[in-house]
Image (tube, rainbow, N blue to C red; front, side, top):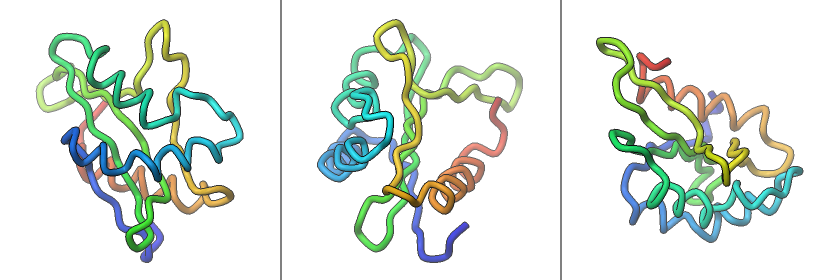
Length: 125
């Protein structure tokens, strides 16, 4: 993990809302340019599309105070003792949610996001 990147696990709507402008900037800079990568789409999904027993979290990467990466996750019920199922948001209207990273920096930011994910959820499937 890059030492100059700080990661956070975001689990509250207020914390997520504070990232909206920077997150949307990251989404617009992605080569896919999909609306499903935006804060507006993901936060609406979290509010209205989770199944019973599901919760959400986002792993965010910062360089100083600037958001440089985000990975939204849906956390499903435990699938086996001690294990949880993690997935990215998806349904019939949400075909692809992926990492959003600062342009040209995916190779350094994605490993930091995955390291934070493994730290927060050491036993997931």
